[in-house]
Image (cartoon, rainbow, N blue to C red; front, side, top):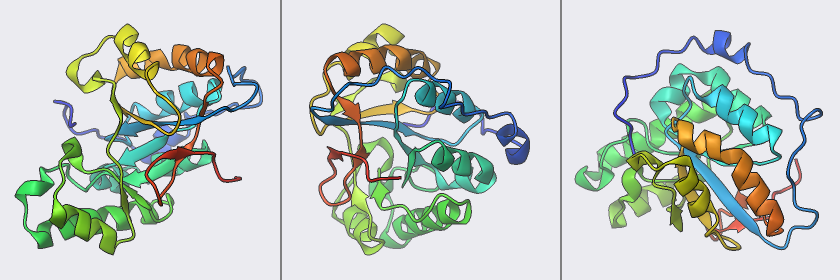
Length: 226
């Protein structure tokens, strides 16, 4: 979901220089054993909010999949690299966040292809996961995504952060996650960022860990070794 915000104008290198990821000094609320994995996902980055989001995630021992818009990845390559360096996974969320189901095949192709190029060019690797804007998809969108080797990923739980959900509601939404499931959140949401410490505690209490999204199944699984 695209927030009603002005385009982020970030001097990428300047912002990246302010990002400090201190995993050694962090006190993550990690589960003693992982009896299952869930996927935290954040759409619409990277933005000026990304450094604070990455800091919150790493401080609490969480990893997430960042579904980036290509236009923002191209404008802020240092932030894409910061996502990867923080242990996050980077996915494709289209270039300009349009309603893809209202576009023709060539336009859908352009949205997906340019984002693949922007993320790879920024140092984020070549994405294998794709989230269509608004969760809107059809046979054309799926066909184009598959042509680029992308697995379409929607979500099992919607945090409703895009709809102004309070932090308590976002924490409650994350509490509904079960093994293999995926939750939708957004890079720009201050309430989602504020929910991270409690989400970490909640997952640890249930012996659930944050995992990667399998490109084969679209489900959360144990992370591959870094």
